[in-house]
Image 1: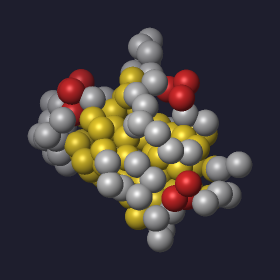
Image 2: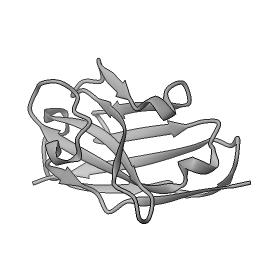
Image 3: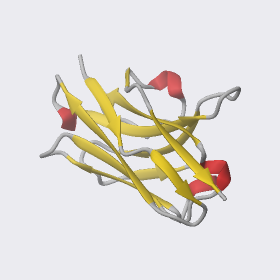
Image 4: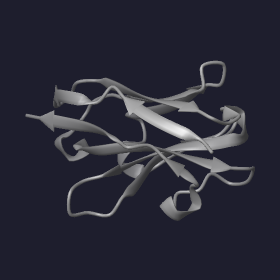
Length: 125
């Protein structure tokens, strides 16, 4: 059983940068591919980015390509999402998720086994 705790959300302005983190405990962190999803009230949870178990492969949703970077530090059991050039439409609760095993980096939420509680990112003009 893996526990995930996100942190680093907050209120920023358009064009600013922000890094959110997700600390994992209770499992072997390098056994899991990790991902970030986000959800705006009234909308479905959407995929943002994913990273393979050892950080060799990454995958991004089109709206964040070139602006967001996912990374991980297996020694610290932490995955990060660096968000640059933030836009109003990036406002959402950001969730990290863990997926057991190997294979392709999935973009579907139901492919992930464990979830954090989320951290709110609000972008204002």
